[in-house]
Image (cartoon, rainbow, N blue to C red):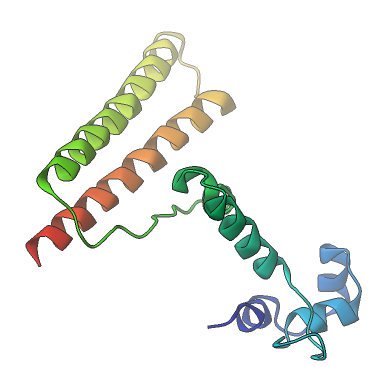
Length: 159
């Protein structure tokens, strides 16, 4: 699916409420949902195209993959999702061992964060603070991502 198609599906028909929420003109939204092959097309570079350009630029300048994918990771987390980047199809046993160690560390960080937060709260009877919730969620999402990546590495190794 192309970016203009994704936006068209997500936005639907650009109503006045949608236009107001996006803070752009109706014609801009329509242009975002049209294909753009060259400068003469009626479509416009849309927000997804721009995020794609940011990531491609970051990768081309040698930024680590985890940092380059930051915008996608942020959006996934923001909407209670998790982003799992693709795993190289060729792996070796050292890579699997390293990834297993990283996965174990992520899960350990999650348990430590939960333990520290809940130990204090169980004594006082208080609920988790927003900051504690945020930390637990961040460590939990990292552990989920690490586990999924490890499983993909193992699957690639088995093939």
